[in-house]
Amino acid sequence: MSAVGYADLHIHTTASDSSYSPAEVVARAVRNHVTLMAVCDHNVIAGSLAAEPLAREAGISFVRGVEIDALYAGRDVHMLAYHPDFENKAFRELIAHARYALDHMSEVLLERLKDEFPTLDMAEYRAFAYDPDKGGWPMLQYLLFKGVTGSIHEGMALYPRYDVTYAGAGFVPLDEVIGTVHAAGGVIVVAHPCETFKRLDDSDVLALVGGAIDAGADGIECYYPTQSESLTGALVELARRRNLKITAGSDCHGAFGKTDVGEMRVDASKIRL
Image 1 (tube, rainbow, N blue to C red):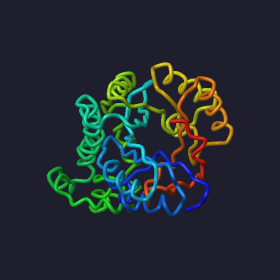
Image 2: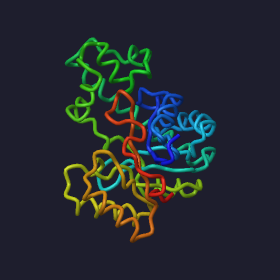
Image 3: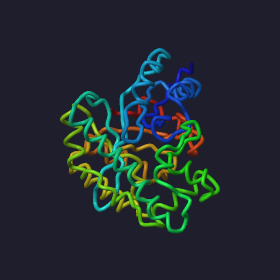
């Protein structure tokens, strides 16, 4: 292994919507000289639990995590919860609710598509044999199977087109999410500000991130593949000024995404967690 150790604290597995299994994620972490990692699947902890012993066996420092949808400023925001007590009842109820709300969006979409695509059927969808190795989520694969879309990614555009929005999905308000994670002994970090607050000026992004910090968030995912150098620098400066946690994440989704584990090559010494 390289003398330099990299950090990647935001990786997905087949437990949510990546095409990489927990074992494949750990193997890629080893190959790419990642020495500090966390699996943060969407509103589910199975991938993190499966990857943890594999990472530790490979000599990688591992942090338990999960990415949680929350409602903030009228929009869906992704929050990264690190090392909460996975057995905490309120925490388990929180992520179960968020997972239900996320999955229910697909059933709402199906109902709205049925007039235009009458071959779609709810019972068939619920019984559909989803292949986690292809990545994405069941509805994306089902729409491809039914010929509604021509690729697994095309289905994503149908949600906003038919007014099935994350903001209207019923996620828990941010302050409640933060309170639940803190009560479970965890810390919570604002994920990928450049993606969460897309198409906004850096100053507006910083203001919204600052509002999340004021609500009780503990830190910022300062290093992210699609983020500009100027915004990264501003986020790091904000985090240092306010004594916040600093993390880095590839947001790797395997073949379903465009990034690889550890691809940013952020030295683990830059992380404050």
